[in-house]
Image (tube, rainbow over all chains, first blue to last red):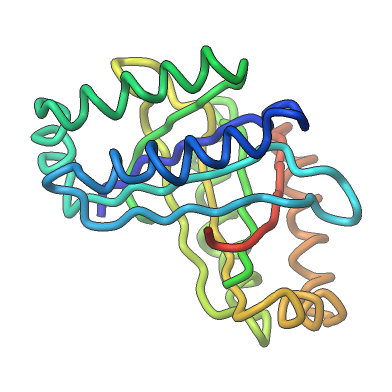
Length: 105
Length: 105
């Protein structure tokens, strides 16, 4: 599988509920709308090890059968909509989003 | 599922092969040896979006049925062995490891 790992930094505490609503009700459904996506796994991070805080608020793992399937999705209006929404979330909530891609292994 | 997301920073290019050997031959098997672990998914990150470099070298997602199962593993000698090996890798390769935990959602 070819995977994209998306790491979201924590929103400010007062923005948390609005971030979660935007993520769950709008952003994740836009990801699931990609025609070639095989799976979307999302994790809500709450804590680090041994009492440390979590470094990120959320991680999403997007899976495609192979890199070609990801690249086909990258040419779709659904991809443009997802990226546009991510940009709006970054701007609205002052968070960072880091996305890295690679293969299982 | 309760999940731990482990993010490894990139080793120096000259250390990459040795890091990979240590990770695949020693570290990942130590993780799989945890008695209550339900799954270990590892991703070798190669690139970011739109030509950017990957922010991390590797991500591992460890899954347990629930937080209690993770906590039981945290009391085992296998957990101590895993954490000790992680510390040795961090020291040997000059990398960072950030671990955050939470639930699917």
